[in-house]
Image (cartoon, rainbow, N blue to C red):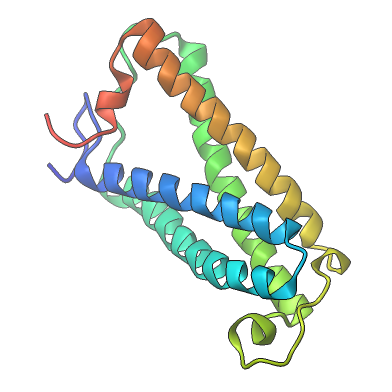
Length: 177
């Protein structure tokens, strides 16, 4: 089942969700490590991973938005779930889209303004700029911490539903059935 049903997400939505989740965790890890790296070679190596993966996340996020907007509908709310929880869940999902798009935009802005692409992807020689000297660095760093907070909140809510409410919410976001 490629499309979602009223009681569960379809295979395309599930695939986009879990692939995005894994890649976002990898981005956060590589981004925090790059920000704290002391030597340029380590930072360049991390950025060579970080930047292409960020572009994949951009494509997956756009695909997800287009998928929901044009081709599929989300399942019905979890039975007996309070309205405020449904609204909060909707807000968190929209916040994810905004933060992800903002993180990609600020990352692209840093690369363009700093000219770092040649140091990261070009031949040996150019040195990495000090990214803190460029205005998009502030929102990019803050966005990373806010994204971590959203992820913790999102995962915590899913685990609450799975193990406290026992309404099998995680099953809706997996393959099969």
